[in-house]
Image 1 (spheres, rainbow, N blue to C red):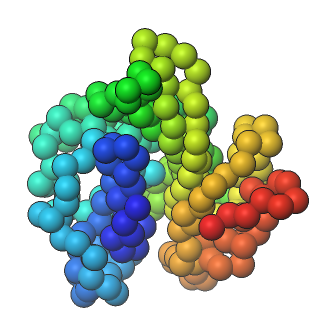
Image 2: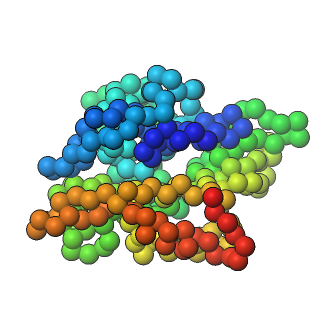
Image 3: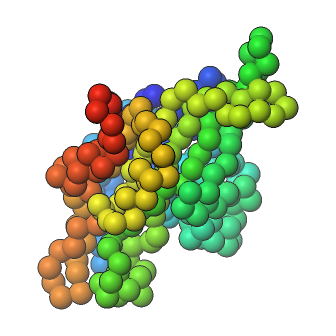
Length: 247
């Protein structure tokens, strides 16, 4: 796994390569986040867009310039696989130059990415991608107002099951599980994740921290992503058994 910067990460499993939240802007570049809201990138990416290895798919939790910058959008082949939310699917497939290979996933829906390189014992490497709950604003009147403005789009997180499946069929033998929080707050909907796991453990969590704020309807700033305190609480929520450790 290679952290590129901000939320952008390259994840590799048995020659399968995923890119999360592609943002390759440089320090000082600006992105538009909503009505009257811009953000400035503070750091440079560890690698530039043209230096990326051959990829199999992009995971995109929502359609926002800080997650999918214009350089990436303009450069990307329109047949490249993007796994994302239903809202982002509508945005990406309705452009003048639409993307043609976009897979929308609602919460707890999944798809599998498979490698064509089988092992000697006829096991295919597989990454099972499952959409997890996420939300920028807790449910209520404020969320309805923000939705009306279109200031922050619907978002999600991801659970990746890295494992093997027997050629032809067979149960997925997951050997490593990664939870990516996505850009979210610590909302009640996240409590559904440990119930969905049914005591299966998470091996690695990639938590998007920052405590991002945007202007509210009556001047005060509204936090729309996890800060450090909420990140710790999210980890406690996911660690369900004594002796479990999340890296």
